[in-house]
Image (cartoon, rainbow, N blue to C red; front, top):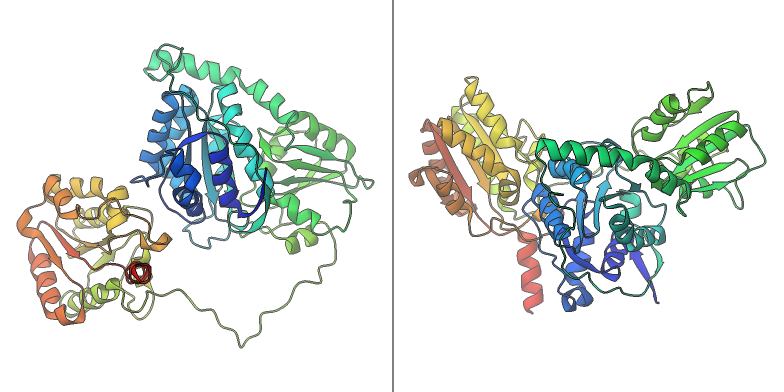
Length: 531
């Protein structure tokens, strides 16, 4: 066994390799990206032929991982919290089919929305699906949960949800490795029709899942990740979930004066909870994200004890948990708080100098402002979302992956003209293609700009599933080849770009404009590596 200094994401990846992983399936999304990247760069993973290519989106990742589990191998799926929405169809049904080979789904949540459009808490998905969940408090625990989690998944015959948060995913700590396990041999389920969710069989499978719930609670009560730590002062009992336990202990040099129930595995351990409630006058819940446990406790206990947390204002309803707001919640003096000097101003992110999106937006905005003052531009998730900011102020929406094309179609259906969509190449293959097919099927009056920088740039330059295929995909979906226009977004091509945009907006049907120039960052990295 060796000890490594690892990010939380890297600890998950290393644990999966050591636990006999056969495939990781993911779409890049902060703060989960480094899990898959670590496996892609691992010499051990290459020697063991562990699959680690990026998937087109989270739904395909989840379904492919379930297919690997079907064949008896151990698989892991990684995504950020909003990716769970994309994967949800298969994820929820996988709890009903169950698994064959061990299957772990890692959802990396982003409290405070450092790089996300919402503060979603993935624990609700695990609870809704009726499967066990892990929530580590530190990097070593993240490693241990994954390492043992595949075997646990196989024992109970269900997928496991592992919930991470940004601070744990992107901070480092020493992690002790365990011995490498062999990969599973290929084998199929001995249960006939296990994976066939026709209603008659699905009803049977769902009843079996419900019957497992008592065993899941018992497993949580016996879990090494759930600990009851006694304290002398019974005025307050504290439930500390995941990284919340770390933040609590940072406020104490030694032992906490109050009884603490540390939560690292769900469903909630009923026996320990009832013990805490019986001994304490009030309960404080420390959890990073939404008031998941707090909400459950207020209905779960039903005995009139006061439960404090995010719902009653003891902790802020939004934003990250941290040692300072935990200190305030437990009544300790917080000397770490300080005001940011007024001389320091926020510096919002901006498109890189030399980025092709800049030339695309400059040209598109000028054409629209000159000739179509009532225009609207529907954008998507990617670097080009920064077109919302000065100096471009170029877009009017950014909701979720793929929504640019479908929102543009809906607005066009309502009579808006011109209705323009801007989407990136990776986002287009992730979830824009189906929207384009809707447009083609109704010959919607939309102009779609697929700004192609030949990579998944926003998350660090991972491979894009659409590289070299965008025009073929559009033709295959039924777009008239005469209205698929490719241009190189450079200042010297400014007049050509203007002319193309003018022509395609005037065309009352589906048109696709593809400004294509490699991301300036990936191009720079290629040049450096070639030297």
